Length: 197
Image (cartoon, rainbow, N blue to C red; front, side, top):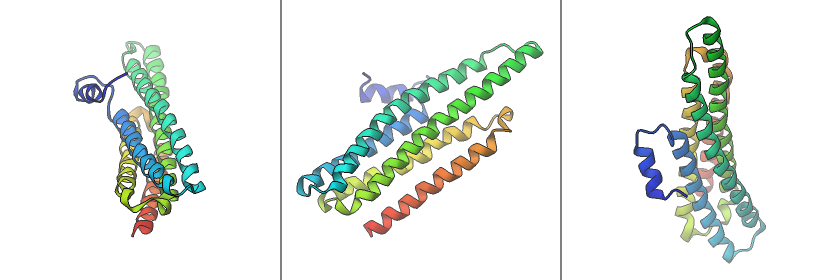
């Protein structure tokens, strides 16, 4: 198991993984953990079903993000292997192009999956906000901020994977998905701020 210092050192190294996607997912999991702490402490005072359901949901999302982390790293490494394919002949170039398109889509789909899980965590945080004790509220707020930032950060991986010229046909669909996800984040942030005002 990698220690926190080890992970930070790996991020700062010249190795392509872990990178921005991995860091975004780890940040989201830290954000979820803060929301979980706030919910658990608040639930000790009030055994409301809303908080108990939120705790279960957030634990499941944290587990899903652990899988997203591994899938994101694997997808990126597969994409890097495709860039090494030969392209000396027309057949080789065509095969390489096809492999790159498939791998780039996969490398974009993984952060989208992670982002959708992060959004579910944000929804849960907003849902349980009224039940959170005021003396632990800042931790809930910090968790929400980290989750929202993590969604925006992980979606940058989608943007970069669509930037190659060979992805021109696939790019519009992924741009629509990105706009949808970022719109959801903004809506959830606004909902949270209205509740916390």
